[in-house]
Length: 127
Image 1: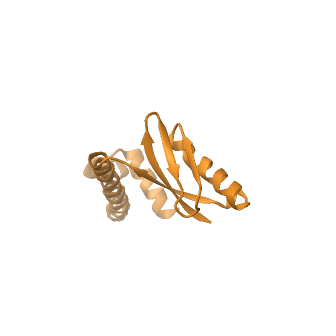
Image 2: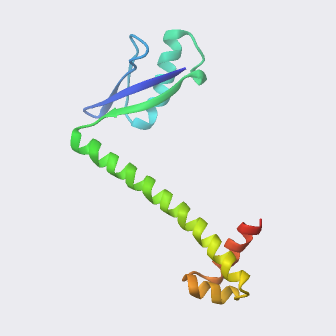
Image 3: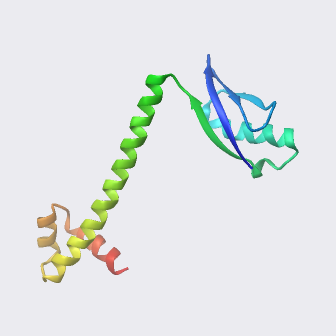
């Protein structure tokens, strides 16, 4: 069962509402505790196993903070994508340069990486 934990900061606590299950409210000191608290509350209310309850966090933040979180999330996503592209390009470049019979040290020099990294990328390509 999938539920949403709508979390609102009230003082030093997170007040949590579960819109999908009428009457389920809880609170947690830390946001990291919310999933477990909600799973337990839903399980008690519906007489189900807490392990069967999947909880999606939906923190309610002021606009500026919500936008800051969104910017970070988007930036991390772009960085992850760029790192994956760089990894693929690095393996392809190593394969091409080594196919030209360049040494690992020459390949490393051309790609501005260590010769050990060339060996790792080469092993990944063949492994």
